[in-house]
Length: 416
Ligand code: GLY
Image (cartoon, rainbow, N blue to C red):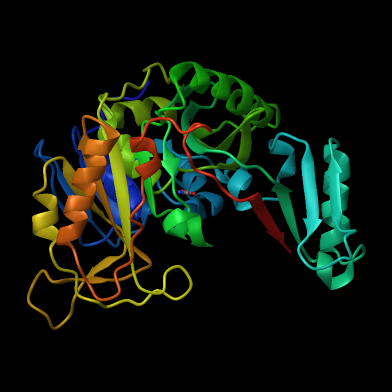
C-alpha cells in the first residue's frame, strides 16, 4: 500500500496533463514535465503546480503519472519502476495495446483486415480466427499478398451509433471505472471535416447508466486485463475503451493505454475524491477506492489553431483568458500555448494544434455548455477554430439512438 502522496510528477504537456495537475493539486504539489506556461500556478487548495524541463527520471516525487502514449510505449514506466518509483501507467509491454495496432490478440474479434490500397475488391478478410487475422496481416504487410496495396492495412469494424469513452483504472487485476464521457473527433460541426484528437467532450453521458458501465467493464475490459495477465503483463494504469453503442450492444472500437484527451478535461473536474490517493492505489496494486463523481455535468470545448490538424499555424497572440476564467464554473486548460518572446511579460501565443480546452461545470449539461461557450466568446486569436455543437445533442434529452451522435467506421491503421 502506498504512503501519503505529497508530490506528484505528471509527464506530458497538453490539456489532459493540465487537468490531471489541477485535480491532483487538490491534495498534492505537482511537477509537470515538460508542461506548458499555462499549467504553472497555485491551486485553490494552496498546492503548487510547476512546469519543468527536467526528464522524469531526474525528478523526485511520491507518484509518477504518465499522460501520453509515446513515453509509455518507449518504456518510461518500466525505467521509473526499475529505480523504485511508484508509477501510474503501463510498462512498454502493456502499452503495445496502443503502440502497435497489430497487437491484435488483445482485441476482441471478429477481425476485419483490409488492404489500404486498391485490391480489386479482394483485399478484405473477415474472420473469427486470430491466427488467420495475424497471418493475413503478415501476408499483406510483407507485400506477398497484394504488393504495394497491402503494405498498409486497416483493421476495421463499420459501425454507426453513439460513441462513448470509458476510462477504467487498473491495478494489474482490479478495475475501477470512471464516469463515461463522449468525445467529438471530427474537426467541424455536424461531424464533418478530418478526424482530430478531439474537439470537445462532455460527461456524464445520459444514455450510459451505471448498469451499462458495469456490463461494459465485465464484457470488454475485464477479459482484456485477464488476457494481459495470462501473458505475464501486470497492467497498472488506465485503460481507455473507445466504444460504439450499437443496436446489438456496445462494441469496442479501440483500446488506448492512457487517459483520453479531451475526455480527461471533463472527467477529472467531476471527481469527488483524492485523485492522487486513487492513482497511487492503482499504481501500487491496491485499488480499493470506488471512484465517485459529482452529479454536476462538465462540457469541454477545444479551441484549435487555424490549419489544425494538418498544418496548424502557431505564434498567434491569445487574448481574453482572464475574462474566460471568470465565468462561473469555468477552467481553461492549456495545451498548445507558449510565452511570447519580445512581447509584454505573460503574453501567451498559440504553440500547437489544440491550444486550449475550455471546460465548464454546471448542474446540467445545458448549463455547463452555456457556461463553456460564454467563456469561449471571451477568447480570441487570428484563425481560432472551434465546433459550435459540442454536447448539443445531449441537451435535448436522449435522441432515438441514445445520443444523436454518429461516427464513421472505426479504423485502426497498421503500417509497416
Ligand atoms: N479523445 C481521443 C483520445 O484521447 O484518443
